[in-house]
Structure formats: C-alpha cells, structure tokens
Amino acid sequence: MSSPVRVRFAPSPSGYLHIGGVRTALYSWLWARKHGGTFVLRIEDTDAERSTQESVDVILDSMRWLGLDWDEGPDVGGPNGPYRQSERLDVYKEYAEKLIASGHAYRCYATKEEIQAARDAHAATGTKDGFVFESPWRERTDGDPSEPHSVRFKTPREGSTTFVDQIRGPIEVAHETIQDFILLRNTGLPLYNFGCVVDDVTMGITLVARGDDHIINTTPQVLIYEALGAPVPDFAHLPMVLGPDGKRFSKRHGAVSVTEYRDLGYLPDAVLNYLARLGWGHGDQEVFTRAELVEHFDWAHCGKQAGKYDPKKFLFVQAEHLRMQPDATLAALAQPFLAARGLDVAADDARVLAAMPYIKPRSTLIPDLAENLDYFVRDVPEQDEKAAKKFLKPDAAPHLRALAELAQQAQPFDQATLDAAVTAWLETEGLAMKNVAQPARVALSGRSASPGLFEVMEVLGREVSVRRLLAAAEQAAQAESAGAGA
RNA sequence: GGCCCCAUCGUCUAGUGGUUAGGACAUCGGCCUCUCACGCCGGUAACACGAGUUCAAAUCUCGUUGGGGUCACCA
Image 1 (cartoon, rainbow, N blue to C red):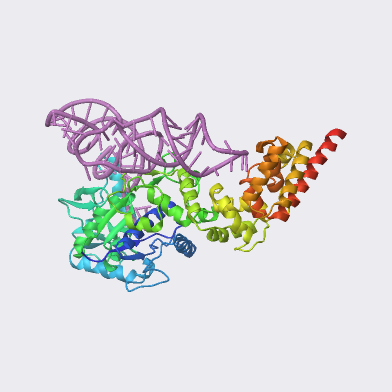
Image 2 (image 1 turned 90 degrees about the horizontal axis):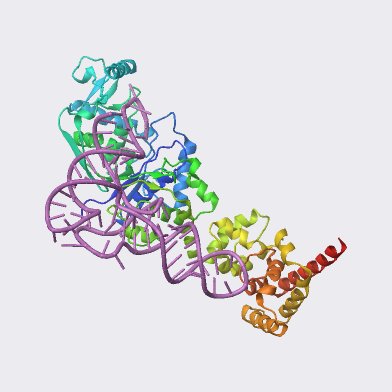
C-alpha cells in the first residue's frame, strides 16, 4: 500500500483529559492500530501561561487507564523526539528561517498596539467584511533582525486552497480571507498552526484527526506544508461532543474528565465503546469490544453532525460491558469499593466469586457491585428499616422458623434441593411462595430486593442462612409483643 | 457581520434514486416471576422548509430557516 500509517494525538496540557478529547484520541488510536501503524502522543505546551506538569501527568494517566497506548511520546521516547513542543523550540526556529529564506515568510516588526489600531480603524469603517491585518513589513526588508519581531507567513493574495477532509469531503477557502498569520511570536515560541505543522512534518504524520473547531486552521496549515515542500497529510475533523441541551459539553452536564469516570466506576472499554458510537456507527451494532472497534472503525462512517452526550445510553453500554467481564475480574475491581464500605475481603473471596453471577445483571457501575455484594460478606446484614417493618411481622415468624428448619435439613445444600424442599413444604401448608418470600428475603439480605432466595442461600451457605433466618424469626416475633404492649 | 461546517424518531444512528424509512438508548404497555434486575414480546415516535433535476428524491442541485465553529503574538 502507501506509506505506513502514523497518527498522533496532541493535547495541550491545560487541564484534565476531556471526554471529547478522548474521542479524538480514540479514533486516532483505532486508525493506527487498525493499520498496524504508529500512534504518537505529543504534548502541545507552547502556551506557557496555561500549561502545567500536573496536567501532563493527568493526561498520561488517563490515556493509560483507557488503554490507549502510544508507540512514541513522553516516557517511551522515540526516534522523532522530543515529544513536548516546549523542548522543540530550535526546530521551529530552523523551519521559520527556511521559510524566510525561501520567501514564504517575513519578519514583522509591527507592535500589538499598531495591530490593534488597524483593527479599530477597520471596525470604524463599519464594513461587514472580516478584518485581515496587512503588515507593512510584508514587502519591506529594512528591519533589524536584532529588534523584537514576529515571523509572519506570506499568504498568497490570490486564489484558494482546497483540502479533502476524510469525513466531510473537499473544503475550499479563498486566500483573501486569510491574513498573514504569525508563525513565531516575538518570544520565539511558535503559534499553534506553525508548531503543529512543523511537528507533524518532522514526525512523519500521515493523518491528522482533531475536533472540527480546527477545520478553519487547516487551510493555513496546508499553505505551510506546501511552502515547506512537505507532503500534506490526510485530515479528519470530528464533530464536537455537546451536552444534552446542545450546548458545549461542560461540567454542568456531568463528568467531563476521564478520571471522573474512572472514579465513578466505569470500565475503560465501556467509555471507549460509548464514545466510539457517539459519532460513528457500524450497521446495527451497539456493543463493541476493543478488538471489534479496531477491526471496524473507519472515517467513512463517522457522522458529520455534533453529537449530544446521553448519560442513559452511556450507562446502558457500561452495563453491557460489566456483564461481559469475567467474575474474577469484577471481584478484583469491586474489592476497593467493598473496602470503602468497611468490608475487608480478599480479591478472590469465595463468597464474592459465588455471588457475582447473580450480582452482575443487577449492577451497572463497579460500586453497584459492592453495594449488591454487601450482605453476602457482612457478618450481620445491615437491615433496611422499612423493609423490616413491613415484612418481619409476627405472622412471618413461624414461616421463617420453618424455612430455617428446611435449610438445616437440606442435603445437599444447594438451590435445587432447597427449592424442592420449600416447594413441598408450601404445598402441605397451603401457602404460596409469595407469602413467605419477602420476609425470608429481608431475613437473608436485610433488603426487599435481592437475587433469588435459593441463590442467595446457596452462596451464604447453610450455617449463615439458618442463623439469619432464625434471627429474623426472633425479630418478627418481638414485633408482636412491641405492638401488643403499645 | 465575513468565512467555514452541519441538518433522519427526544438521543445515537442505518440508509449513497425505487424501503411498510431499519436498529439501539430513553419512554409506554405486556410476558416471565419469590422481590429487584436480566431476558422476551409489542406500542408511541423522524427524513427542518421551499423550489428544481428525474418516470421516481431522505438520498442529487439551488435557496430559505435553524444550529455550530472561527475570525488572537490561545490551542
């Protein structure tokens, strides 16, 4: 085929890794993995004001948690480093000089004040056209390079430039709407459009994926590629991720940072799956494993319109992935959340493993697992007051004692035996399961909702089941005297 | 305002000239049932509008309207 695929994700470290950014990273990563290419991670920290090391750490942590591994970048290095723009200043300087030498760029000594004055004058004319700063230095050569100056690109005055977006098709912009944009600030630091292109050129990037807010930046960038005589990569501009109300996705819509989802107990694969499907589709399939995503992803099936974040759908996808996990994996993931409830159990606790199949379909997030596992591993189940009051009444006491007796006798102590014994007993007593189920449920779990009674009993074991049943019978009987005494 | 992008159920989408416009989430009924889930069955619900091209348009063209992005020595 053509040249090997090299894709990059280039976040600027000015905060956490935004959920929208994750999608960009994911699509890029998928593209690289699908083609056996290289995934490069680059830190765009040329804005010293906003970039922080803490942010870099958070972003790397987030990427690792998601399992979006990079072949070249911070930590792992690579042949095209360094991978932080702040460490590549000499490279930008070198390329800027090249463009000046070839007549594609020039030194501009205009001050901020002069530019602002020009902008104000333009506004004062009341014109409807956009402001395009025309530097007097475009054609002058009498400046003193030792004086502070920026480097501007000499944008062609005529014609237009077209590039073909992988998602949107051809996009054409007239040169007259593009001003002589700045390549290098007077501080020597590159501006986004320049640093980005120089890095993508020197790192051999073959496809650039990013948010569609960059679509307008692409034309000037293509101009730089051409001026440099470098091959122009493919571009794919992803639509934005919006909040449910259609506004830019922000904190008030819910969690925006990847780390928040991790702490909330989402699975990385679920996050990836949901994000992949938000803006991309593969027929009727909704649930994808990571491998399936890699196999099926393509730009052609990416939607063009902005996607609204749907927390309910996200939860659905998360639940699906939770159920796909092996019991042992979930047990290990649940352990810290159990510990947070004061339940100190091993990651491979037999009760946890035994209960997991029944807990899984009743849980969505990892903390739910711990919540549903609670009474299986707690010595004495915490009792829901309302449930106890409603079901542990005097007339339930004899039933609970009978169930305890049946549990004591069951041989072997498993679901089938328990079920048969209880069914037979109900028959002779002329009772229905629903007459005794809820009191028994409260007795065993302390709650009014739980997996099937026989499932719970089997996991709990004979001894614990009998003990809880009898304790509840006692409690139910007590309710009588309390009621009569009042 | 200039420039650029976008437009199928509430939401994510399938659909690339001929379909009863499909699926999923959500929602509403029902089944299952010892509770809660899971699961299963079914319902409500969409091509923004207007011209044109065509035997035929959700699909192609133009316009309108409505969203969004961008106009920095931020990224």
